[in-house]
Length: 105
Image (cartoon, rainbow, N blue to C red; front, side, top):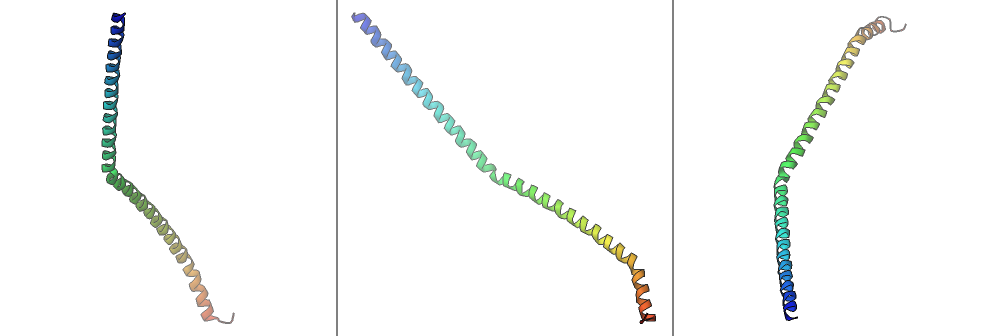
């Protein structure tokens, strides 16, 4: 009986040792994961200015493109209005001369 009891005590001691090793390994893994997460967070925070600059650069490029498109449309409209005014200039001069020559008619 003493021998059986001793084997049980030895098995319990080995089991306790295995549990302690597993706990230590679990804690090591947790600490490693925390350190890795902190490192990733630091790398991300270090990239924030770069990400911000990239966003601003893209926004500025879109703004310049939109501004160029608006200017192009303005220039097209200005040319159309100028052409229209030139087409109507002769008619306006004729009407003005007619009024000067015969104001009452």
